[in-house]
Amino acid sequence: MATSVAPRMFKNFINGEWVESHSGRAYENRNPVDAAKEAYKKWRLVPAPKRAEIMFRAAELLLQRKEDFSKDMTREMGKVLPETRGDVQEAIDMTYYMAGEGRRLFGQTTPSELPNKFAMSVRQSIGVCGLITPWNFPMAIPSWKIMPALISGNTVVIKPAQDTPLSVYNLVQVLTEAGVPRGVVNLVSGSGSTVGSAITGNRDVPVVSFTGSTGVGRVISQACAPEFKHCSLEMGGKNIIIVMDDANLDLAVDGAVWGGFGTTGQRCTAASRVAVHKSVYKDFVDRFVERVKALKVGNGLDASTDMGPCINESQLKTVMSYVEIGKNEGAKLIAGGNRLDDGAHAKGWFHEPTVFGDCSPNMRVAQEEIFGPVVSVIPINSLEQAIDVANGVAYGLSASIYTRNVNRAFQATRDLYTGIVYVNAPTIGAETHLPFGGTKQTGNGHREAAIAAIDFFTEWKTIYIDYSDKLQRAQIDNN
Ligand code: NDP
Image 1 (cartoon, helix red, strand yellow):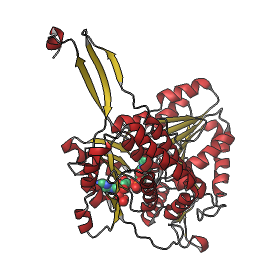
Image 2: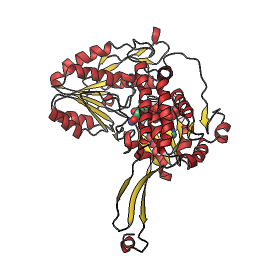
Image 3: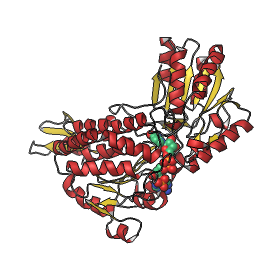
Image 4: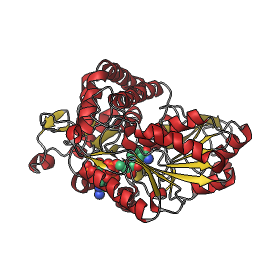
């Protein structure tokens, strides 16, 4: 963390009460899954528009407390205040949006093959949902999971990242004040290996939604497999910005700066690669490096700060090790490259915004997720080559192209194999009413936000009602 704050103890929130954690006894005596399972019996029967009323109240409370929650988040994990405001705003947007879904949750009706028979399909809630979240969007990501789960009639047990319990605490507090009944939302803090695996291994948890690294996602996927749990995984990224020879370079440079160094590069959508057409390469790199060198690194609460610290020592060390890897594999260090630990930086995990130039696409710095302020610039000759480079990594979350040629823009949106594509904007950001997620080792086929989230947190039930009062043959023939 960047700033020193008075230590706060965080309890678990189980069945409507804040109880001590870590004793082991408290966890066993107040099993959050039991509470959620019991509460589910009633919550699933609350009409969805009534569930939505509670959620609307929660959205209002979040809006009222936005500034306080944003400051809490900056103190908790270091990103600058305009970004934590954006994080809380995403939670507000998601809460309003999912409240709206409470009056929709549409199913289908369709003509039956037989006379005097009615056919429809309806969405059903599933049960207790285990939610496991990372530290980089400590309120937005939990809200992307909690709100669609609740509006669909499920109950939840959430385990936030150990580095960021406060923002989820604030979110749960607001839901409770808004009127969510006891046991419907439960929060258990603790490590992934103990609390996280206790959730994924629990037979009473049929749904697991995880956002985090690809390595942990694989472990969770395996933990869910024996019981065939519904499992949504949103994982790592190695996102790219493509800058074509006809790009508006002012826009492209600005996009590369904020896409690469916003949230200290600790975004799943961070633009950690920039592929630049050779005919504008020098111009782009000169301007990019000048902007990067001018970024002010410091305390996220200071209005003049552009980039905060890394989340913790371990993340900082990862960044430093990748700087060495880049140098050793022949990438050209053209900005940054060092830890900052003097003066105002002495008390935090600060690192200079760092740029490697003349990278080849196969270098480790251009292939692996670093999750820190390091950008690799790769020269390219054509759109086709850029798309090959873009798709030539294990991940597939977000990609962007800067061009003023409509044909190229459409070709790129078609051929970039990622869950999200931007044209003339950086790789970062999300609107809550559009699906969010990635391909390949970024995701396992589900999407968050929008109706996609409702799809994950509900199951279809198809209902046939025969009111003919006689045996209809086709019914037998068709099973
Ligand atoms: P981690 O995968 O390390 O942790 C994510 C969560 O999983 C934490 O709550 C962690 O607990 C928990 N966890 C760890 N091990 C287990 C386990 N064995 N069983 C159950 N839970 C476990 O990711 P980070 O928190 O470091 O977040 C960074 C990663 O998240 C990056 O790879 C980033 O790309 C990805 N991410 C993906 C997004 C997407 O939408 N695709 C969005 C945001 C981030 P603990 O508290 O112990 O760490």
